[in-house]
Image (cartoon, rainbow, N blue to C red; front, side, top):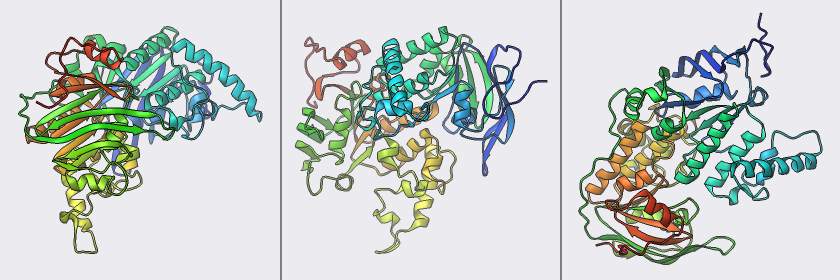
Length: 531
């Protein structure tokens, strides 16, 4: 008889060809059935994809495997052995590592301290740090995940923080590695490098579960793929026997348009004019170096670039979040860049909407409910006012219900706290709030980060609909496919500067990639000013 362990350690059992088997897993949160009778078997030494719409139950299932949640029913087998995993430490002891979509890092700790945290040996912390420093150097060199071990996490770019999360899992010598939307914060080049790492880990016999909404990554990286829809497992197929179109249809339950359908732009008057915009960080390092451009009504200007080259500072300065110098005018009216009026409220009142890059840090208050977040920043709007002193909460809730229905937020419960929604559904709440405010210009940072294929299709359609309604759109995205398909003009940022402007109809990823690396191509005329 096989012994069952309750501390994550595996009892002696016959070898199994499966690293992971989940049998009959079910999990409910109140009235919401997140997982329903899930069965999945992952062969050892393979890369197994799990896809599904936001709210399909993917992250919940993996959180059960990692010990964050306890299943209401079902059984977990690790290498053929029934194993109870009551917490994450038990999962780690069972050889499971997890890289989360939203990082689990202590922001004011160093990289090295985060690597060691939870894996200290004895009371001599210096010994653990010294051992970790050497191991970190070896791992960084082996996988080209170079990060300064003494850097403070909050000072690192999002891409470098992602590297720290991966290094944490590798440092703990996981045999089974779960990655939840790992490329949502990576550039295309960084994502390609990550998948080279995963291929190397697979060749060493590691088992990898990849949760992603990006079908290209599924097709290129995985051996098998399982599809979840509304809490159930609807199919598991060999990746080479499927196609992006088939997988998208399985995920959504209908045919999905994978290409953005849009007609030519009809640019109108200049809405936003930016001249010589400059931003310095707290160390007086210049992050924006004299950026100038214009956006007209009825067009999308896409900003491409490797993360950390000034795109975040550009959005923050335009959105009134970060002090800057230079000149910015919206519909001919100057916007303050520092001092009184240099804030988000002034921008909103002037007709600017903003979908920030980091939905959790800048887009939502995580402990607030969906209906409270739905009105965040717009709570003074006339439609939300009961009288001069009180907001009409009933009206806000009704408005939130309508937005949830339109944008397919799951679960459609306005009273649910933002922190209890999946990352993609959190994004939908922010996108719905900003688009429904009907701005003259919309700043968009990474609009589909961590969002599933069906929601990507919907958000893209909404962006094009705004453009066609005569709105100006500034789109910042690390997804070159997204930039190329949505933009009417493309600007490329490198080291805080605009390296050039390109027409999406005549450029390609190679040319944009060179500009993103700081290699200028002077064979084409600069089209920086709006026509």
